[in-house]
Image (cartoon, rainbow, N blue to C red; front, top):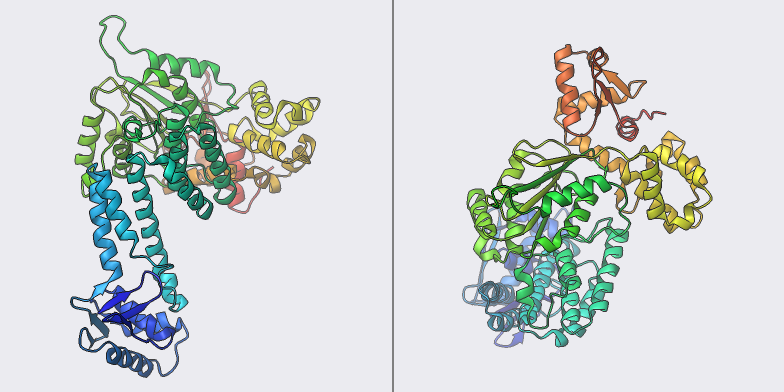
Length: 594
């Protein structure tokens, strides 16, 4: 007996197709096959057949469908009633998804072991089990529940097979296939990266880089996200001429994970120079020995920490011949990524296959990571670190590699680090950034209107970049119009949102990751009439003792949500809430501020 679900659902006996009458019979059979001998309950079968509106005779109809399938399939299989549902045992019969998964696993193992030729053959054999869209002739309920998982599995197998063929050096033969695949799946970054590699491997570097830029724009427009680490690593390989035909494994041995440099980066010259000095000064000037190089960039959300770090990393790249590692330590929603997940990504970039890493705990992953870095001159950029617990396993334990960290909060675990604290930009630097982002021609002659726009951005580079991008992309977005719309607190955060750049969302994400009592304190402070408060005023507003108010204020400073003005001899410290933090928090509570 032969069963197929990787395409139209079919059953064959001795080469002859068994006639399954109707979509519901095929749905029941497919659901039982997917269960791999486990019981499928009546309730689940009912949902797959009729959704949330089953007929009154659901039990009788299920019994009828199962009885007909049992009669059609005959003795080679066993279809039995096992409360609370039914189970199908196909014995030694052939099931295409079983064959696919078995050969696919063998192909992935061969690829992990470096046997590209065997991997290519096995993965092609696995793909040969597919004959169209899986579960193509069942109810939409079953198709919606199971087909996406199967399609994703097939695409991953296809990408693995292409990786194997790239390692075999068949770049020219792959270009046409990959061109069609990227057109079919334009948002799939791995396929785009493989086409970039194939193009570069055939000497078409310009086309490869243009393909990256097209993908970057598409990801921003369609999903509001930037390219991920894998696609950025391919971009760096192509940019640095490290893809050479069949020599793709050599390129992959040196990780190049930095995001693209920021073309319109402006300001922060002093900070950039100090960080560059720290990264490029390899040895202790007295002892002549290697010394640890650690730099930490601190500041509120949206203040430009990542932009400065990426610019500094690119400027120092030549000092790190063994490559550059990059990882974001927060997800898009602001939640923290566990260190074992980050370590797995970094170890893959360092050449460790998934098969080698599967099942390893944090301690084992940390050990492998540090062994992989030992004696190598790499630059490790860890972006948006949440705290010491998350960071500690990611720090090298030898001095040859340099580490750059961005964070909203101080990180005592990075001993001996050069600390750079970023404040909002002053007026001249803000105007320079706006001109760089919007285009100098769009700002020339309307400097006063541009300053009015910048007044509402309050020196926050993320906000400046949003309005600059609006001006650059829309001819009718003149600074005067933007200034008028930004002047309305109720509309300001809407104006400060464009594509994947969203000032309000970024600031609220930071607020939502605070401890509950600290977040509640921020909410109360955002509703005060003035943006500044001292400890006594905070204690009154928060209805807590002075010592508790001071603790909460310092916690908000540490989280980058408050700035502190240095106390004078006779006065205590004053805490300042950035206008856009104040607006985003109060607006979320339904109380806009001026």
